[in-house]
Amino acid sequence: MSETGLYCYAITRGLDPAALEGSAGIAGAPLRLVEHGGLGAVVSEVDLAEFGEEGLRRNLEDLGWLESVATTHDAVARLASEQVPTAPLRLATVFLGEDSVRARLGEWHDAASRALDRIEGRGEWSVKAYVDADAQETPAAEQEPAEEMGAGRAYLLKRRAATQRREASAQAGAELAEEIHAALEGGTVLSRRLAPQDRRLTGHTGEMVLNGTYLVDASGVAAFKDLVARLASEHPRVRLEVGGPWPPYTFASLDPQ
Amino acid sequence: MTEQGGPLVTSGSRQQYQLSSDRPQPANLADILERVLDKGIVIAGDIKVNLLDIELLTIKIRLLVASVDKAKEMGIDWWENDPMLSSRSRDQELEEENRDLKARLKELESGRE
Image (cartoon, rainbow over all chains, first blue to last red):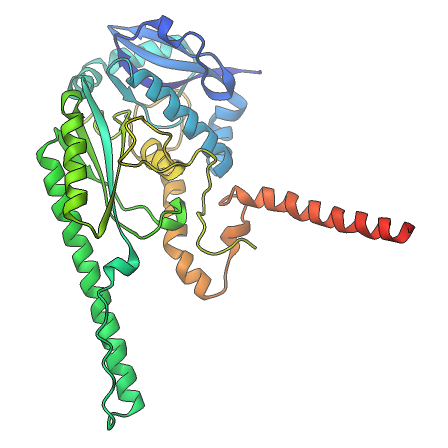
């Protein structure tokens, strides 16, 4: 390795450095903790040829590289967040040495502490709602065109009916998503709706009408899952998927939400 | 050419969360990218990452996703082969090479008989 930098995954509070022993980060480099003022930054060494300004500019455009770094970044944030309050950093935060990591921890101490207070003892849970295309489409009462109706007119009527059905089902999907999100919001500390993902990116079937993320107290997880299950049984046309706990990417931000 | 309708970004560890599972499961790539690129706390490191670059990349993926239908209608399928956008294309290259080599081998073998 030529020149190295420190890739910073997350800011933690109360993490025992021994908890990182034996775990590896990007490119298999060992994880370690840089501590300052009661906070600990989880870091590992990276090659600056890859993670310097020029390298990053090039590599961020490479989806294979991005996949591998993003997956590792998430795995490390997860490792920490399973043990102590953890604020994951955004991808590719790189320092030149421990001193500058400490300086930055000092600079952001109060804001980071507030973020950690907010998420302590809580997890980020994702709930997605899908509506299958055929379930969404209300079966059309196929009316036989009247004898005297011309083929052209019949065609136009059919087209118009199809458009109306599509609009109605999109509207129904949006309302359903709103209803489910509102119900879930009630039992959670904070919530946020993310943009629905596209199936061409994820490979899911049906249409994703809700991509919600929720900050849930550890003590409330069972109730939250029960609520999801109940909503799923109340809405048989909707498929609900619950995921988590995620490291609190959405809720550990430095700005008050 | 890859089939229509498959995931654009594939990940070996992709798995869907199911209601029945209580165990945390590996997330899919779209879920991870959505969070590590757009969320997480932003602290400036010593290496200037142009967050703009990251945003551009995200936008690029989104644009790509938004325009796939339209592009397919027009018979454009560059994203299937663009190494920047598809991790498959490298595999595809290898596959093609492999196929060519096999064909040549077969030719040679049949010639020897």
